[in-house]
Length: 522
Image: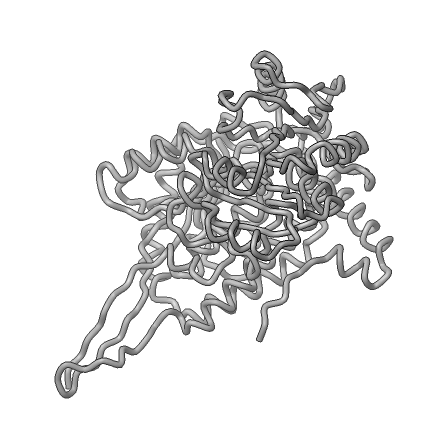
């Protein structure tokens, strides 16, 4: 049967129950406040462990608000967790795939039951507005239901081979798990991205050690506890909080790790991969960011183009690997697009993401503010012009900035090729689609890309020649963002990815499996 996405907010609006949606969001935020300040342990098998060193997590929404205290491992507990997961693999690898599907569906129900609490955690952890936070929980539920469906449709990836060389020969192809996977997740999708990597490994018979971002460890903690609560073995699902340099050292040293999954910057991902495979060839699943472009041709519906480019560039403050950071506009509509786009950006509601009318909440931390300032200064010093934005909002206890549009920036600037991860978008006039496409591809990244045009031939040309793993035409909800599991498999080409098998797609689970050919003779 066709896969059906969660899409909570859209359903509430369609059913005329929008106020009920907001009421449940407020309940979720209230529950987070009630539990604020708790001390969360490291989870290894059935043990809940504490360390003398702590990670104090403060909300970017209000830096005086302590969301929780987490343990700061120096590497010893992570190594212990890997040993535990390695031993657990001996049994989990032979578990029936049907049982793994059943547990995954149970976890999806539990995620749905906790939807608004989890959304509230995300808002407090990284500053997403309520619509984006609920959408992230929806995405997580979608991953669980979709991967369960994929594994079931493929019958656990056991396939009888039809060929015969001699009489009585029977061949079977069986996809088998590798072993222990270390899951290293980012701050921007602390639940959904942690979930897709963790479940990708678990549902295929591997065991995991989850290492979340130190900015957003609570979402991952809740995910780990949900998985354990519904029946995934405790020794197969381990959770360790530690600085990034600690996990880097463990990955470099430990030959017991069978594979690792990482979402983050290209530089860190490449460094981890090189050290990881230098001693032993092993698999990795990497998603390494993007420098995503949107093309607007003379045949575009400018109303859709403005809305889509705005949401693509400034949703969650540009802190998405799929965010639109470059816009190429055909000359005949360039000035009109700039006028409309400037007006749209200047109408942005910036502020507390707990408030229902807020579109743009805070950046994740002080380092992001410093990076924003540095990039704005660089753009101006190199000859660019700030069409709108460019200022930090002077707030004492949060990290608010203005969405920023840069025009007239010389193409020699490194900003055209650098992943910014803050709400800054560069716009350039082009003469035609061919020139635009050449510029779109003129980066090392290849994650997402979008086009606005009413001409089917232009769209076809764009799709056939663009170097990106996820491409959209006329996407008003986000010109390069918003991939949905089971609808738009999400992953990148070139320096943006590694396996070529996209999350939320029909081939993703194969990244965590290796083939074994079994042949018997009568």
